[in-house]
Amino acid sequence: MAFPENFLNELVDRNDIVEVVSSYVRLSKKSGSNLFGLCPFHSEKTPSFSVSPDKQIYHCFGCGKGGGVINFIMEIENLSFPEAVEFLAKRAGMEVPQENQDRESRQRARMLALNKDAARYYLSQLRLPSGAIAQEYMYKRQISRKSANNFGLGFAPDSWDGLRNAMKALGYSDVEMYTAGLLRKGQKGGYYDVFRNRLMFPVIDVRGNVIGFSGRILGDGEPKYMNSPETLVFSKSRNLFGMNLAKKSKDRYIILSEGNIDVVSLHQAGFDSAVASLGTSLTAEQARLISRYKNEVIIAYDNDGAGQTAAKRAIGILEKLDVKVKVLRLKGAKDPDEYIKLKGPDSFRQLLEGSENQLDYRLRTVRDKYDLTQDEQKVDFLNEATNLLAQFADPLARQVYASKLAQSVSLKDDVVIAEVERRRKRLLRSKQTIYEKEQSRPSQLLQPAEKELRYENPYSAIAEEGVIRLLYLEPALMQENRVPEPEEFSSPVLGHIYSVIRAKIKQGSNISTAVLSDELSSSEMSLLVNILHKPEELSQAGRCLRDYINKIREQKELQRKDFDLNEMAQKLRERKGFEG
Image 1: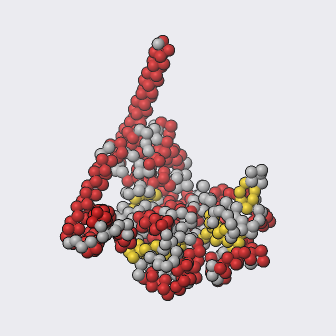
Image 2: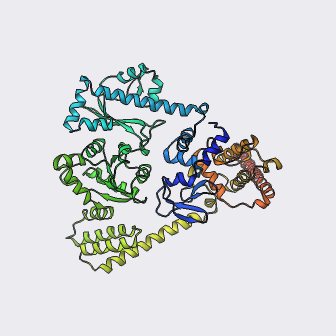
Image 3: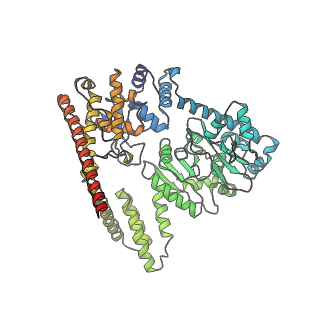
């Protein structure tokens, strides 16, 4: 989408990247003029996320993501380019040129409006006599009217076209409702409502938009819960049910539960920091969303095998972030909703305060697998438990828990501590060997961080990167040299980045991440920033550019010769086979 260049430049000037990033990431460690913090886009414990106040760009040396302030907002808020521009303009108190609203931006705005109207429709149906079945279910689950209103609960009637007709009356088309995941196509043509005879839970993002729905069946049928499909505005893996409310909680922690009813029940009982994933196990994106608001999570999953398995997986994701993790032990109830109904909110709060930290929880789950009265099983338990402790990065935690482990099996502390440290060293040696093996391959060192951007010819690609870097830093070089055509590049992604930069230079644009953000994808922008971080000898820029161009053309010629030789060999094989 083509925003005026002067508008984009002013937008970036008025949204300092350090100030914007600091509202999402704790930046503190300095390296020269750069600031460092934990990357919000991948799990890490050692800061590798760099923000440059001078260049107004960010770059993660771990996952490779990078760009300017617009790209950062696109990534962190899951927004399109026009939406990120609007987001930053609102932050800076700037007016967005109205003529620049593109097709995708209009589609997203229209879909959000449709979802909001659909939520109002479901709410109105809940209050009608026909919504008695949903009201009865809510009464049985002890969901109050106040809680229902707080979450915007509604009712999808058992009708093939109730929602469809209501939305058509408001001017929405079948195609719009189908694209939003509210209608399905019939086998004989036509459309019908996706959600029927269900208690409806609107999914609201942290900005207050209705982005999708989750519906609970009110009679027989499967699935018990149905969620909206992936759409232009809804992604299950990036959102959490109830997060729009939980982010405002004064509690120091987020309560992570499994189901929508659990969340409603917990909020109703006064635990307003509860959230739930949307029909999937916790994802890395959801974990990072949590970490933006709280640095402690209490996992309150169902007290069954599936719940415990999900808890272990969630721990593995959350512990990679700067988040403290505890696990709730539900005794005498299958889930938080049932526990609160049986024993009350006060008892549940005591349970929360006494929740196990994730280290205790993981050791207990290992211990529960073995009969420690039998020597053979005791040895098996020690092997698994010491392997687990060896994975803990904190040496004090390893020592404390190794001592507790020793006491549980009547062994001396120093024996178990020594075994844990021995296994720790072996684990680190193994990881180091794998890392060194990977990094020792020259072709690997030349590859981009993202695997989908792999270079077919790394030796040509390194020269192609050089051309891009020099033209970005010194656009005037294009007027002084006969630069290659994009088709001469061996890497399609580098060819596209180059063609965009070349076109902007020809238009007389001032090259910047802001100007390029609307034409480069997030992965392409990350690759560009990574290219710009590599050193370049600008005092000899013209000569370096010509050397890079010659290298590209040499590799192209070698590739052509290899192709000709392979083709000749194939023809000889075919001829020999024919004569034989």
